[in-house]
Length: 599
Image (cartoon, rainbow, N blue to C red; front, side, top):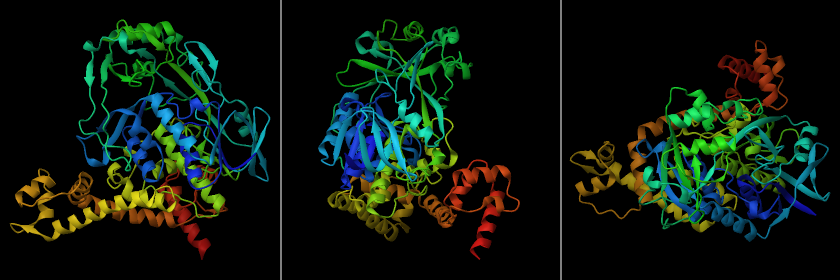
C-alpha cells in the first residue's frame, strides 16, 4: 500500500490532519486502533473555553471541522468572560460526546481520499534521514511521502488508580510501546508527562436540588462561521463543592495516592491539577468548585469537572459522597491518571515537521500540549504543511501577531514545554487584535487559498467585513451636535443601537456587523498602538538566521544562550528572542554578528 500521507492516530489532531490533506486532493491513510475511537472525548465533554474557543474559531476560519462538529452536537453553549473586555470573550460548549465522535467519524468517512486502517504503527522506516514507510503490528508495511504522528497519550501509556497500574493509552485501550521505542532509536528525545480524568457518575443518583443550576446563553453564538444559528434545546450543568470533609478524606489518604507515593514520575498540568494536588498546594482553601457536566442528552452520566483524581476506588467513593447533592451517587467509571511519553517539541520546525527526519510531522498531545483544541490546531497545520510540501508549494506559517495558532506553535517549539502546555489569552501579546469574533477576517483568506474554504462562504463573510468598513466610514464623517458619530460611539455607556435612536436612523445591520463596528471604533486607540507594535515584531521576524549560523563564534555570547540557540536553531531573530534563557543582551550580540556576516 502507498499513500501521500499516513496519519498515525484518530484523535482530534489526527482528524484535522487527515481532513485537511484529503481536502487538498491527496491520499491519506488514517491508522487507528478502532473506527469507534475516532475523535473520542476521552476527558471532558466540552469544546472551547478561555483562549481555547479562539483556537476553534481559527481552525474553522482555516477550513477545519471542529467548529462545525460542536455546533451540530453541542448541548449547552456559553460565551465566557462577557463581563470583561472583548479580547478575552471565549465561546465554550458542552458536547454530547458520543454524537460528537460520530459526527467527526462521518466527516472522515465522507472523504473519498481517506482510508481508515484499524491497526497499530510499531515502527517508522527511515532512509537517508527521511521517513519512507511505517510498519504495522500486522507486519504490513505502508509506503508514504509524509507521516503525521498524532498519538495523544498512547506512547508507552501507563494508567494509575491508587497504587495499581495498567498499561494503556486510554480507558480499555492499550498503549503504543513499539512506536515509542522506534522514535527513540531514530534519535528523538522523549519526555514523560502525566494527565488525569475525574470519575463519571450516574445522573439519577444525584440530588440536584442541593446543587446550583448553571444554564447556557439565551441566544448562543455558533463556533463555526459556516453555521447560521444554534437552535438546539440546551441542557444545564450543576455546581457543587469539595468541602472541608472532602479535603480531610483526601489528605488522610495521600499515602495511597500514586502522585504522592512516588509511583508517578511524569509532570502533570499546572493549570488543571487533580483534586489531591489542589488540597496539598492550597492548604488554606476550605472549598474547591466542582461542576457536574452532562456527557450527553441521553447518556445518563455526569462528568465531575474539578475532581480529577487517581486516588483508590474506595477513597473516590468517600470523596464524592462528602459533596452536597452527591451523598448517594453511584460511580459509573472511576477517575485515573495516565503517564505517557511525549516528544520534546523543540525538535520541530514551525511547520510541525521534525528537524531530524524529513517528512515526519508531529501534532497534538504527543508534543506536550493539553486539550482537544490545541491538538486540533496542530493537526490542521501539520496536515496543511505536509500537503503543501508534497505539492512543492510554499509552507503556511501563522505569525504570533495574526493567530492564537501562531502563538501556540511558536511557544511549544521555542519554550519546549516541560509540563502540559495549555493555551491562555495572556500568552498572546496582541490579543485585542486576535479576538474570537474576527478570526474569519484574519484567517479565512488562507483557508480560501488552500482550497479548504469555499468561495461562497468567503464572499458571504467578506460582505460582513465590507459592510462594517462602510458603516465605520459613515460614522467617522457624519456629525451630531458638532461631534462625529464615531466619537459619540466611543463613550463607554453608548452602544450602536443607542446611537441609531439618538440620530433617528434605522439600521438593518446584522449582529456580526454591529459588533465589528462597535469594537473597531471603541478600541481604535488600542488597536492602532498594537498595530505599531506588530510592525516592529514583523521586522524582527523577517530577519532570518541561517541554519548553519555559528553561535560559538559570537564574541561575548553566554554559554547558556549558545547551548539553547544551537539546540532549537531558531529561524529568525524574533523566534530567538523568545527562547528561555536568551536575554536581550544576547540578542544584541547575535544581531551584531549577523550584520557583520551579511556585510
